[in-house]
Image (cartoon, rainbow, N blue to C red; front, side, top):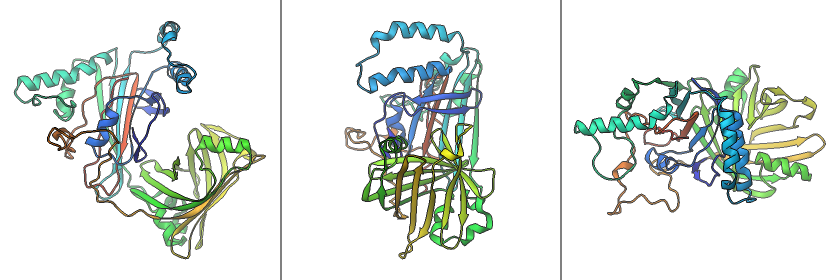
Length: 432
């Protein structure tokens, strides 16, 4: 799958998240392996990630399936097929607790022509047990178009881009199926600038440029890393994805502004980890989220540096003891060459240093804006060696492709870079 700007291997039913889906509530979602994971990055010029997740309504069923998959992932057993009878019995017992409403969400994130972040969301909700009808309705719309002489040309290819969304949604009317579209534009002030107020202008120019973000910024450079001091610390550092010790390792940092804040992805050689920065209710502070953990960061700014210090932390919504919180004071400065410089030490009480990394970053030179992500071994050339017409990116007026099925919940997401001259991506969700 195409994730964090590169092709990667991920296990099915992995990348589990919990999200609020309008009309469905909070649902757990996990990675679903479908052809969409190959087709979306090519057709829609995705620059960062194309992910398709599905979910089951009952958390016990969803998380139970996740736990059941672990022995296969770890190589303890070859298959869960022998466990089918007891698993099926458990599903029958739990299914009585579920409802008859399913749905799907298509989420496209990127930047507009001015480089400002934008997020578009299309949601379908099927109530009253009408979900199983959804995969048949786009087919019915295609048959009507064929009967009118306006359908797709004969031949094999992905069933996408042949009809507009209105033609497909017209087939929903006899059913209890509703859809909605919501677009958010990130016209708000950049996160750190909004938190600091007028003090932000006192920071060095190179630091201000990093935090004056309204689109997507990619930085590259080099860092030195000091690893954890204890065996438990090394285990915790690995869980969070922190890099191992190295004297000089190449670094790439991708910062993407979203309507809710900023997403930071840091790559140290082959090791990468991601966090989400969000506004804090208190001026002069922001929140940084690593998975289920949220850290409250107090900011202080001056002519020489920006400093961030952990002053509280939570697991989900549960506050954790402050005396057990990580100790750190990250610093962002400018070196003699005018480059953005960072220093991030992280320590835990009793365990000592988890990691300390420091180095420099500069903006990555822009590419030609026309390069599409390609997965090694994924061939799309036709018999004459040219890319098939169905692979050509759509115009800005193209509607989202038709949904192929509903599940208790289904969600996809993509993102694009601001340097792309191609249209922003849109995705379709698959069955679950």
